[in-house]
Image 1 (cartoon, rainbow, N blue to C red):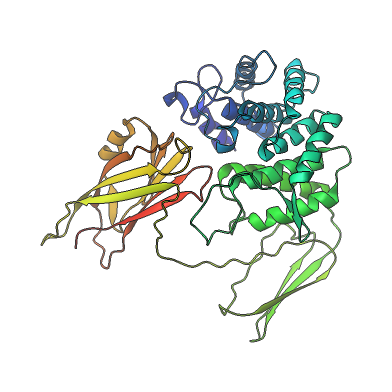
Image 2 (image 1 turned 30 degrees about the vertical axis):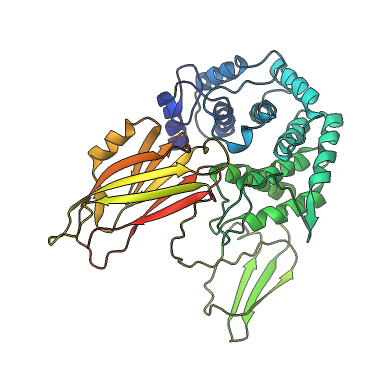
Length: 444
């Protein structure tokens, strides 16, 4: 946590605001500044947080309000669901209000009262599900019961219910050509999580409704316990942790038994002593038919994970990417140095993508030439470049319909036989399902 706090300060502006790329950006960003204020406040009981940093950020947010009391969006906004529509400022203001309330700002504070008053006037006409989910949580924290009921009634009308689960979908979900991904889009996970937080934060939590939302959220988790992106993982885990707190009991024990017709037998015992321990076993035969039974009293989560390698699929629904390698011609001697010319383009329905990431996986035995990376960082639109082992990552504010060009040099560090292609991946930071791949290799 101390390391995270120190790292976060790198992205601070002199006026107390924060942005995705710190002083490389012209100004701070309202949404990110609110998120940092919330995070720092939550960390205060555990580590030292400089009060001056919090005050500067709080003053900055206070100074960026409209006359109506709602907050103004300042700086580059990367979150896809908080921009691009007529309800932008409402979503943003709800988010900032939530962050301040979770940071311990009193409901009676003029800053909160003015924001809540502005949001109440706007809420009556809101139809966007994401905005409604944010408002539901905002009005719950503000203890505005009448308008909260109106918002919840709208959400109930739009809810998808079945199989003991409840969730919400966006009116228009971006298309994807990746049928192997069955998890929900980032924004839909967030929507369910915000509603869950609202349900659990009222004076008398509706645990039946909360359980149905948690069941759906649990199905969206990836094998590592997270979700599609950083943002939906943060919100969903916060909501699920609150549910765990509300339903906690140190009583009860469950034994989960997994069997197969071929003789496989494995038992998992969960009680108060090991309830936070992840237990897992490898299934011996795939494909195979397995039976899961549970005995005892309590609640456990069982997840099956199937991992496999598939050929890279060129998906150009929202992005297109290509790689040219120089020298292109085959040579008699081993090629020690290669140039990569990468072209990435947004092909979706909007003007530009959200914040985009371009990842370049090195060929086995090759490493990037640092000077070429430094040169690319000076290029307009590329905010940062990171090298982590054999992966080079470029962060871009956005990618438009005009192609972005990246040129880097790589050099052979170790000679490797039977070399497999390197991969270039471009994807949306907040909608990771929107991605495209390209392969490259050394001339034979």
